[in-house]
Every structure is written in structure tokens, then in C-alpha cells.
Length: 203
Image 1 (cartoon, rainbow, N blue to C red):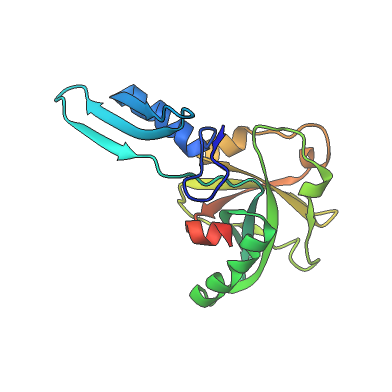
Image 2: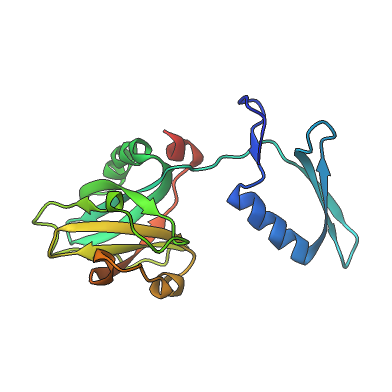
């Protein structure tokens, strides 16, 4: 639920980071959530260590939700493929390309792609993006121990791909299966997802 329509203290209790924080803290601490009387908006979170009684109180200031998740795919001269994101929309992903180009001497091409939600198995037609023909046969996952990954479904015959994720582990990406459609016959490339800053995610 979104609290507030202005930009001063926006907060959404459906924020996935907030929900995960709530789950994790409740498992390891005595958690007290302080809500505003006016509308019930969370404003403070007090955590009490169950063994020592030590406490800490955190202020809940705002939240950011990525409503149109995209990732920037980065292809290197070796054909290795990685991803950066997620960002809010294609333009934010595209704008990150300049930063990557400054940091790498092997970057060959970048492409923003929609990031399909793994909770949904049906891949929409809009989730598939075309590739330059010379890239299709050479793409392969970059070796990396990133904390999150993206599953890239690569249809080498049609010359297009779709990206699904993020997944917390490679095993989780391996278990995901698309519904009937072109994704079933596509090659599966599990590629590292490198995080971007909050500012980069919103550009």
C-alpha cells in the first residue's frame, strides 16, 4: 500500500525489500513496528536482540519501487554476456552504458531488455528483443560469482532473446521453466547480474 502522494516521504508497504526485511527481522529479533496514527504508515522499526536485550530503532523514511524492471545486457569482445540492473525502465538501463564503457576496454555492445518476473511463467511477446546477427552464435555467460543472476533465453534460430529475473542463485534460475512457447526451445544462459546504484536505477 502506498502511503502519501507527495515526494517528501513516499513509502509502500508492498516494497519487496521492506517485506523481506520484515520477514528476516521477525525470525531473529523481537521486532516492534511503529505506525502513524493518522493513516497507519510505518515510521519506526525497533529491533530487540532476544539474547541480550540490546535494542536499536530505525527510522522508515521512504521507499523506491521499480515498476518497469529492465536490465542492461553487456556483451564483451569475447562473447561473454553479463547484465546490470535492475533499473526502472529502458532509458535508465540505456544510460548506464556510458558508465560501463568508461570502466571496460573489452565492452563490445550493450542492449537494454525488459526483465521478466520469474513469478510468471508466460513470456509476453514484448519480452523478446532482437540481436545483431553476428552476436547470436557467439554469446555465452560470463564467469562470475555475482550474488544475483539473470536467465537469458536465447533463440539462436530467430535471433532474439528474453531475460528473466533476478534470481538469488544459479540453482533457482535453473529450476525456472517458461510456459509453452518459444522459450521452451531456447538456449539457457545464466548470466551474472551486477547491481547499479539507486541513482542509476532511476535515471
